[in-house]
Image (tube, rainbow, N blue to C red; front, side, top):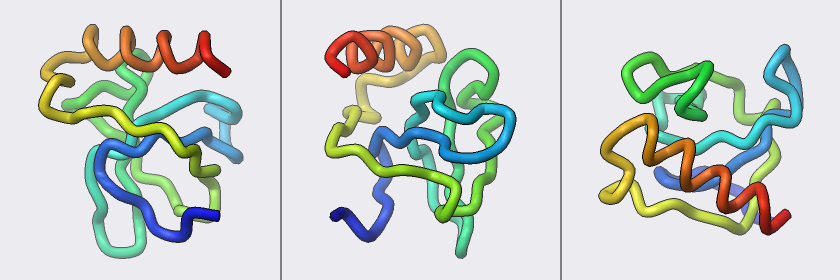
Length: 83
């Protein structure tokens, strides 16, 4: 089991109104994790979540390639199809 979050890691929201949604970790802020999905939560307006409310996956996204919300949505769509 993975124990720490890293930038670019793909996670699944386990609690809240965004439950079961795939998201990408964009930053770490103390004991909070900033996540985006490119649609509801854009790169300019990330969601701050408690790490206990996120399930880690073994997938990662290269944040250098994710320069827009459109690119983020496309990357998550490809990962979702593999699930």
